[in-house]
Length: 295
Image (cartoon, rainbow, N blue to C red; front, side, top):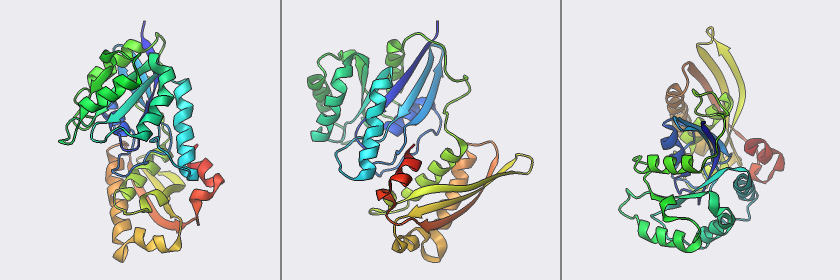
């Protein structure tokens, strides 16, 4: 009988959770950025192999913070621990394990029986996978060394071994999604995430965290061969608009053009994107906005 499991991926910001998901699914599922806290929702990616189906949930990076947005991101990560069949803990081998890593470990200890650990970024010259393995062994004495893996989500090294370990833990069950699915994300969410990825990778300082994307309109055209989309990059302050637009509208144009290119690799129809910038003052303090963009 085939296997089926929900796998929650947890780790510190920028540990490589989204990169792992994209590598495992061999598709663009979750956006990737050098900025921490890029993932804001629990993003689902689906991996189908002869052994069965794994449904991955890429949770937001877990770290200490009292900011309202970050508190909500933490709650999203925590909510998925209990419900998942398996937990995949991604450690960044280029950073020393500190108090945040110990906090995550303390959350995961009660779930040791369903835990797999991936020590990521072993391709980096700064990698210290041995120290990460010592940390994991100390924090999780109940986790067998055979469930701890060195990986590079960037190069793909070790990904198959992790998947095999996850399938070994997965219970028997029928697939929850058709075999051709690699994500259950809605079209508007995928478009918004690609735009946000292109924006945050071109912005500096606090701006990547001060931006969200609002899809205002979508209209199918040319007998389904084109989707027209009006979207807004929303910032917190009037002074940030010009920084996102750029001199002579160069930055907003670059974000639009590169978003269209990225979307062309995802969808089998053309995306015509009308992209603008607007202000929603102090949106990160507004529960209604946070609920809408994080739900």
